[in-house]
Amino acid sequence: MYDSSIEAESAFYDAFRAADIEAMMQVWAVSFDVVCVHPSGSRLEGVPEIRKSWELIFKDGTRRDFELRCRRIVGADNYRIHLLEENITVSGTSLVSPPVLATNVYQQMQGGWYMVLHHASVSPAPLPLEEDEPSDQDKSPPMLH
Image (tube, rainbow, N blue to C red; front, side):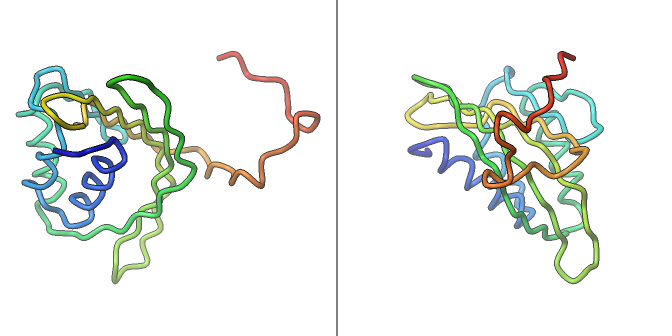
């Protein structure tokens, strides 16, 4: 249905913005191998569980706006992994949500690209913009785990 992982991701966030369950589920692959983890949520597996979670999120009809930042895309052949930061606001409110780090995985199958994983977690801090990244000499040693 989608010609690229970028098109599928655009449809995902359009459906999320509009709180449109049917549009949201069109983005997901029809497979029991699909997985979704909402911030502070448990791992949901399979289309029925994932659909139920989005129905609960969309139930109140809240329209969310997204500023997507720092997207990185990796992968080859029929898989793409999108790493990005979601900054979510709700129109008409003063809600300021903390940034959310998201990993979205897309697979090419059945003539198009479909989501097979969405994993989101609250970020401890916004990601630096590329121009704000420190040079190699300014970086602290890496934390191993």
